[in-house]
Image 1: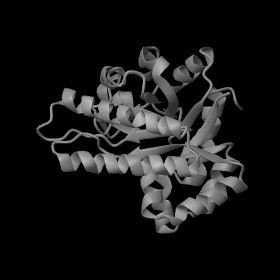
Image 2: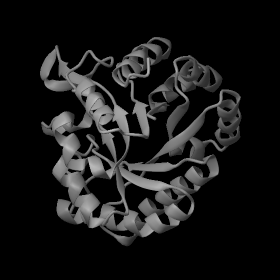
Image 3: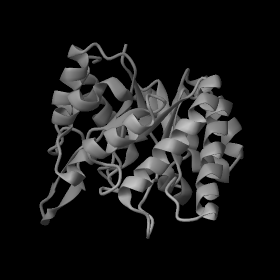
Length: 272
């Protein structure tokens, strides 16, 4: 059975500004049909009180946090940079274990001056593969993402596959439907290339910015150019049984964006 989570990182600003509370966010996600959420690890590292708060909130609504996004850069030019990236990775893996998360989505990698991109990809693969056995002992799968903030490093299908193959099966992939557009690729075309490596999905929608067609802009789900419906149909055809996450980046108020985008995604996945 496909299960839908809601990514929450885009709503931290609303919470910080007092427009939304954590309690209201979880209630909103639950009321929109989500059984899970996916959050950034830094929120909980920076504010340890959130760990117990979210344990209680999720339990109250019969929800869980199956995926945590660990934001760290595993590309390095010196020993200090290397250790900094590893320390953050380990903090994230500890949090996954603490909150019972099944997937550690490790993102945030970026090019570093003086480090060739092929070497950078090898660094990511090798460091994650080294930590995979420890993660597995704790019931955690490590995954990379096609990451559009670093389009030259880890966004194209070929670059993601280079990391996955280097890791020799120890690392999986979080397939983001929209991010491939940053390198001129389509998610529906790339899906067969990486399907056997996938551990979860992100569904978001991008299209050309009407005010500047050379730029991509986030849209409500179904209103942009990302081939989300085609990806959803294909994973249903293949019998996918796992997590997908809604990533609403349209900028609409949470109370409008979450229910609307959830309804669209549930319809595509025949969960309506």
